Length: 296
Image 1 (spheres, rainbow, N blue to C red):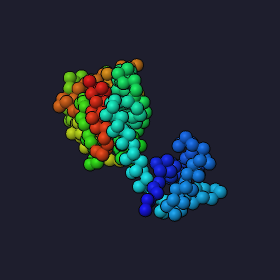
Image 2 (image 1 turned 90 degrees about the vertical axis):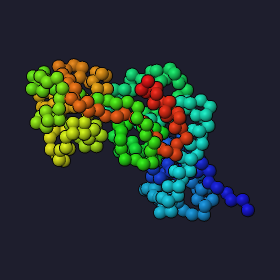
Image 3 (image 1 turned 135 degrees about the vertical axis):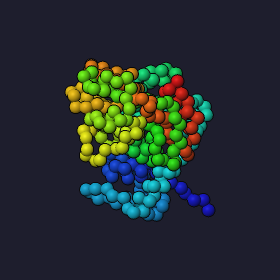
Image 4 (image 1 turned 180 degrees about the vertical axis):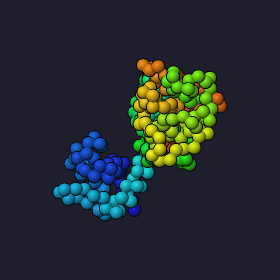
């Protein structure tokens, strides 16, 4: 006897409702009318013989079984997307949709330089960018919300393929009248006695900068923390201390408009930049090609 299975469209409707808990917003996300989405969900529930969504006049809730089905529906949808990606990559690499996540200490300093060439070389690529912190990008990557992410390595994610692409040295940034400005190169001991300004917790650059100088991490709440590299630079320019900045950002003009000086680290501390994607993705060769375009 033939078994009737849910369709991709029905599963997509279900996942959208679970994410938005609102029929109107879910329909909008699926580029469908609300009546079409509602009918599709009713057909799915009739097909399975169960209730997946609780509907009231005031709110929408998933049933416990509905939550379990959504988990499996996401896996099915990712598998279907992988099939389409595999076929597309085999025909023409770096074409069609590609969702790229980038951390904020890379995105504004690298992408403006490389995206024009990427568009010229691969006009069929429909690139969507998302800038966020590493932890949230990895969460989206694992959940299928992103295809690939440009991050600072390493990180603990056993289900991800990681490919190093480039080293990015750290530089000390300080005012010309700061005592460290007189040094040709900076040691960890120099920084141990300085007011070192860092990004707030959650930014991987914070840990990588401390590791580059062999400095222990400060206790939560100690020191002065910035929300972005631009904020740190302004804090240093106002005389609040010194900071460590990646060379990539300095070359892109991070210090422009200030009189700040940079000094290299004596032991050449750096961070490692690279791409990460799900090991199950069929687009590994395509992502490696993307890496060569980003860092030729």
